[in-house]
Length: 478
Image (tube, rainbow, N blue to C red; front, side, top):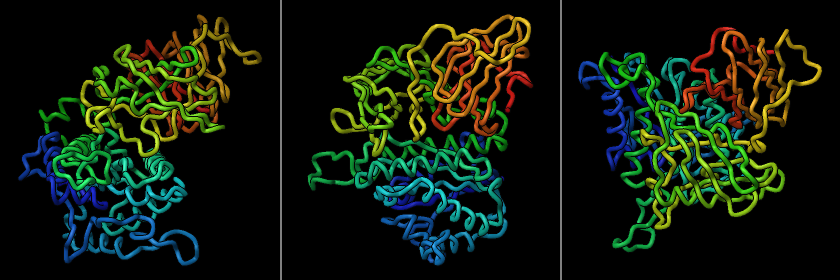
């Protein structure tokens, strides 16, 4: 069995491929996780920075403009010289190798993030065109050739808007089952200290354009977990992936709810991947590094002043000023590097007990209203004998719902906020989603043994504290 990883990007990808050994360490780690011996069963790195038969990386280049060119008719994208070199590289691979399971690791965001006018839609359209051409060169379709994105790294010359556009584009592609992509690594907790910015080798300069060697190794480890998770079907008996039941902690803890506690505090709930609890915070994380509430209308940005772990899957954030009424919560907005008091970034995230950093989708998470008393049944909706019907319309949420003795319904409309269903009875009650696609639901276990069902790109979710698994028919789409 041979699995292949095509590693593509610009200078930070080249550093991992040519200088610090991070790319090779990544594929060896995938082999270890899958129980491959590296001989009979191996993971092969497809990479070239200066090859006669083509390149997979080019330093100092942007996807839009250098690799791809706008179509001559003003629509779509045309293959540029650098993209053609990538296709040439694939074209020179043996036919048998091109037919083997292959994943694309995409480590390319730096130069494109400089464009403050870049839109997620523009970036997505370019990547869709690129992926179609690359998959055709392999003779494989989207289902067989996944993309693993390194979420836009904190590039010192990039713009906040450009970083966010790329992260949103990556996440929207990852949410599209037909495209087949994953966020393979998040890298806000990086030193970015490869360059000697002040020309003094006695000092270490943080926050530059390139990841340090240790940054690259960390990114490679996270990519390895993502790749191994994607290839769990090939795991050998007794391997770490097999022993984990095919589920490793490759995503890290996602913040799924942010509820007001007064006007300057937010109580956060996270959904763990294959972890059990949040880890103790270092001094910089405890100062609230990276957290910001941004008002949708005025764009007012309020940064957190403190963070405290309050439980295995809960955090409390404190802010120096009132959180805007229409706020969205972000973690690492814009450039996003989690710079500490000394300028370093490594170790400054909120982590789970497996060392994976917390995250919020790039759209931000809508801050819900103050946690309040149990909600009442919505007027005008008919329930059965002893049953209740609860309605979460657009803009509502943040409640704790307690149903009746009968078969209750919890009707969730597109645009609703998150809520907790305190006494959901699997096999009896129903969750009814209206205007929400089935493929947009993401169900994850909570630290307390329940479920969190995220239903939109903003990260809103229904939390079922007492339910370990849903029964067939519990969820209905209307």
